[in-house]
Amino acid sequence: MFYLAKKFFKPNKLLYISAIVLGLSLNSKSFSSTHKKIIDNSLISNESKSFITTAIEKSGPSVVTIDTQRLIKSKRILGNSNIIIDPYFERFFDFKIPYESQERVQQGQGSGVIIDNGIVITNAHVINKSEKLIVGLQDGRKFSGKVLGQDIFTDLAVIKLEGKGPWPKATLGNSDKIKVGDWAIAVGNPYGLENTVTLGIISNLNRNVSQLGIYDKKINLIQTDAAINPGNSGGPLLNSKGEVIGLNTLIRSGPGAGLSFAIPINKVKEIVNELMINGKVIHPMIGISLINETALETNNMKVKVGYVVPKSPAAKSGLLVNDIILKVEKKNIYKSSDVVDAITKNGVNKFANILIKRNNKLININVKPVDIRDLSRNK
Image (cartoon, one colour):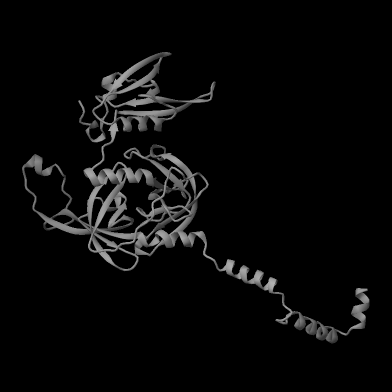
């Protein structure tokens, strides 16, 4: 049949008839209003904003650039600058070498986010030892900033903007409600570039910093594959609703690169509150390192003491390496973070009862935690 139709109609006639039929079918009067609505709705949906755009519009204006300046002092030998002097020369030979004092200004940059009326949060390493802070907003305004407090152990700092608002303010979320696989949007102003945005997912919720080879911090982090670029430190990590769920703090470089980490916003709230009230944060410690082990016979996790700091509260109370911690106060222990949480909740200068297992014997030990700053001075 197709062959006959093709033979009967010449190509130009077929094209002409097709054009007539097509023209009739596109006549506005004959065009169904139902189909028109479907197409209009389709076009509207294609032009709608993505959830990323909506999230950035919600909290993006509150992301700031923090320019820092600090004075670096050094000494230069007068005369021939190529002369290398042994550092013990002056001491042994009682010879005073003529020095010239030199000063230079070291500049740095990071990101931050406004969470309240002129209150900015960022990383402690962004503003550490800075003598001058200039905070730049998305709308072009710049203000001097005053550090209200910082805590190097959790890498958090609070800055107060000096000037008149109004200031944009980010919406804070609840980091206890996020789950692995949720969307994660990292925002920052690296090198002063306005709102650099990267997208990823939540990869892990309680990444212990000791697992990353970091032993001078005291916090569990959110892990994400959303890229955090240099200069993004201190910027917010957002959920799909545009709520701040974390504060970007570090990236993994070298082998296994591509991982980024943020401080959970609920922990940020706690630290900021203490910094605003006291200007510092107390970190109760007893002076032990912990090891998570899985018993193959039962497949249950156990927490062992890996190291005891000499002259620490733990050492004084009799805790030993390889002791298995079963309970701190009334809290059952299943992982090392449970011990940290229980000791933190107990506070300092108040005894905490710890139930341990040693050589198949159950032993109760009382330990009085001290602030981490006093741990090395504890005798």
